[in-house]
Amino acid sequence: MLKDKVAVITGGTRGIGKEIARVYASNGAKVVINYVSERSAEDAEKLVAQIQEAGGIACSFRADISNFEQAKTLMDFAKDEYGGIDILVNNAGITKDMLLLRMTEDEFDKVISVNLKGVFNSTKNALRTMLKSGGSIINMTSVVGITGNAGQANYAASKAGVIGFTKSIAREYAGKNIRVNAIAPGFIETDMTNVLSDNTKEGILDSVPMKRLGTPEEVANVALFLASNLSNYVTGEVIKVDGGMAM
Image (cartoon, rainbow, N blue to C red; front, side):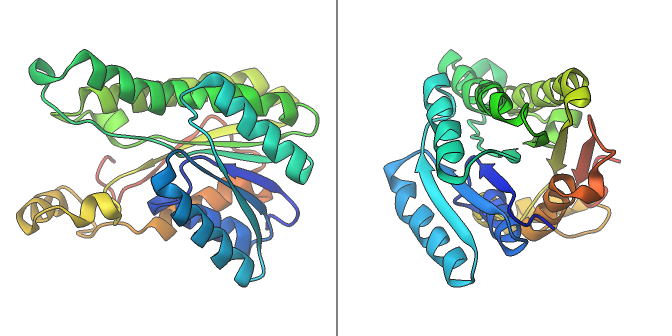
């Protein structure tokens, strides 16, 4: 479905980003896996090796996408390595949860810097290449950006901002054969949810009509649809993958 397409995935070494990289590579894409810290370098190398062993094409690149110039070096690397950029998945994100009166300015600023400004940085630098041949941009938002959540004012604001950004850029570049969509996951089985207590998980499941957590693969399959020709007439959309939680 993605034969010979070049895909850049920010925050691609764990959870949803990791699964998107695998699914894209197994569908023929050449994948650039972005990571930010030295701690993630080994995970990136392992993922690249796994993809290559399965017959796919992948490489990794370290860059902090909250920094405009580093985001530019990431996109320049993808273009130089594989000849262009067809797909950008803005997946990198962080949380610093705290009730508002106890939340520091730094905790607010850092979440906005990565989750929202990082999407701006990566998108602007990828667009310069995509203008030549078109492409698909997929922004990872969250159901929290739609519903809000106590203790996550910074995260909810950043993800709501991603939704507004997605719709605006979709309008700007629809005529240039560039589609821009967002995915809003609910509670997905990742390292973050694995550490939750059983009582917390039970409380979460009470709010999910399907009564289970989602899997990274279920999110990745929607990302595959949005990156492929199956969604050629879809832009400016926010697709929830949440088991009905925010319907």
